[in-house]
Image 1: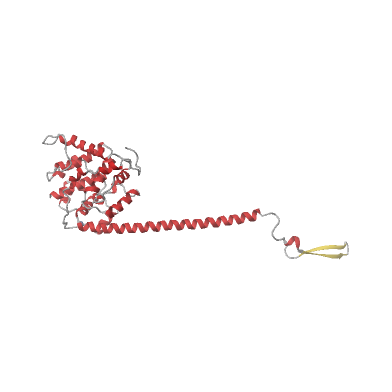
Image 2: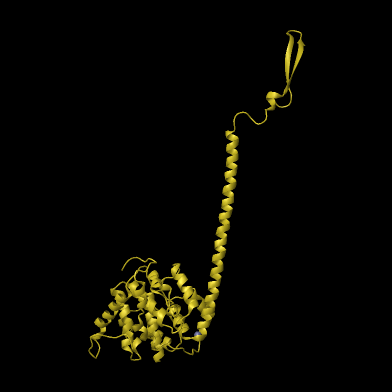
Length: 188
Length: 151
Ligand SMILES: [Zn+2]
């Protein structure tokens, strides 16, 4: 059964029966507590956004169990700084903070939802702009190709072949006799 | 004081889930100040199992435990948000807390998604119980061959 995750559950019935209820006793002592102090809204926001550290210093071990002094502070409900575990356990057992966290989470969820929607719309309009640009370029390319590949007989005759753009005048020269002089009219 | 020690044990369990826990031998005295050494040792069995077996599977069992038993009340809204984040791969086990999981009643398919693979929960649970018996049954004042986790 140690296969990679796949959405198909081969033994769903068996899994649903496995409820681990025999471990429930480990949570029996949990109850609501009246706390004299509560984490600030800034702390709760940081907690919800996963920005609250387990320890204010470097290191991965949670601060609550680092030394006897920190642990005594935890036991007396006086924490010098709120670690992630401190806030989690406080909220788990404090009705007031549970409501605050539920409200902040709902707002965050709403904001993230609208941000995602805007981002999707932005992506869509970017694609629309890209599609229109591609279409315009294709049309221009077709026109240029048509002009380039059009048969050698043009649509209208060129003036310099059909219309006279010059004048021919016969002049008498004393040495050469009659000479035809060509005068250009306009641009040749 | 007893309730605070109880909460300290849960905080320690949460640390096991996030891999920020001290070794059991370092905190055994602190976490049994109310005389509930056996309760502390049940969590220590998870910490030790993480050392010996696949740590992510042990963490997956903890996620399931927290989501089902850390709160007697089911919170469908909280569950919906968390399940969506799990299925979209936007949350990892190290992001989770006991409070975030309480009342969400996750299914095993969600746990497998978090862990990254499937496993047999019954077999893994039995391994942890066997490890507990191996570690602590002989150390107990009253000799026994089996420890029941139920009450
Ligand atoms: Zn509070």
